[in-house]
Amino acid sequence: MNQHILNNKYIYLLVLILFVAKCIFFAFYGTFSEVPDSFSFNFLTTEMLTNNFDEFLGDRSPGYPFIMYLLNHNKIYLVFVQFLMGIISSVFWYKTLVKLNFKEKFSFYATLFFSFYLQNFFYETFVLIETFALLLNSIILYILINNYFEKKQVLVEIALSVLLAILFLVKPFFMFYPFLIFALYLLKNFSFKKLYSIKLIIFILPAIAYYQWSSFVEEKVGYFKPTIYAGLNLAQTCIYFAEKSPEEFSHISKPYIKYRDEMIRNGEDESTAIWRVWGGQHLAPKYTKFADVTNQFGIYARATIYANFGDYLYYAITKSWFNFWKIFDMKPYMEFKDNAFNSAVSIINSIQKILVLIIKFVFLILSFYYLYDLFKNRKINAVMVLLAFIHASAILQALATYGTNAKYAFPYEFFMFAVVLVFLKEKFNWFSKWQHISQPE
Image (cartoon, rainbow, N blue to C red; front, side, top):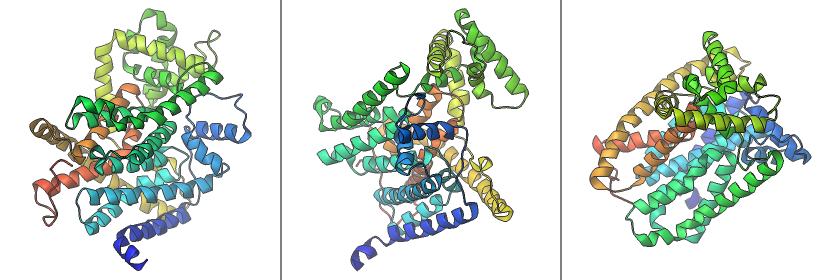
């Protein structure tokens, strides 16, 4: 037992420090937080608890509400469960750095440094999916860089399939993960035999989850989709070229333009203008149900994008993709009772946001270097795996919606930090006592 603790002393120390830190943070904050998005998670949780889905909207998938269901919708309990999720995420960050061949002591301090990033603490107090999504991403990415592409173990594939299915049910956006994982597997020493690999197991449970949940949504609201938000989200990408919508959709585009311009003049977030088209009942009386309206928004968006594909790509890059690399600050949505603590948190948060923005900028620059390295050496190593997931997410979120796109980056911010550390170690001989890792796994 003593030897086990000694061998894992940094993990136990990390858990202890973070547990104390999160308890102190909660002692000063003392509550949970909510934003408008929290309503839909609360609503689905209530439907689960009452087993009454008569008012089901089809907007949210059940992964996160199921956690609240298990906690009997007690939001203080939820905060502590999310604190626990944050601690477990940090443990996997530590294990990730060790796997990237950093010494345990350095991995401990680097993990601790990023674990004290206040946005982690902030999200853990909110009724939002981000902390749960961060945990699942941290585990999945650790599995992938832990020689996953060389292993052929049924239990590993089943475990990954379970995690991918849960992640999909938490946020359907992540449904691309199994495809990206299998693509990376094929690209690494490609052979046609790989097309029939045991790694196809990873698709099974996510596919079942997709079919079962989409069938449930279809039964309740009439559309075979994991979330009816898809059409509304896609319509948000059309906001800056709504004037160019086909004439047949003028009943949508005209109020859309009107609300957009009003919100810009008033200094509001114009990305939500399409919501006001719904709120103003501009599709009534033909379409009044939320699911029907969002489906029409999807039809409108696809037609508008098809007619203006150049504009779509331009704004996807200059608005949505660009916003991915910003920081979505949760601090303004929180109400601190202690003014002194609030002031201290605000100062630290401001400094940390600048540091993380610098890390993101450096990561972006390094991405070009590693892309060149990929074409030169044609080797997929751990860093390439991390780059693939981060950039795939950055591109896909830009194509899927426009709004709070910076939140999509939250599950990947530590891994951007890890890539920067690897580069400093490899190219500038920092931490020179440690093994070079550029060789393929």
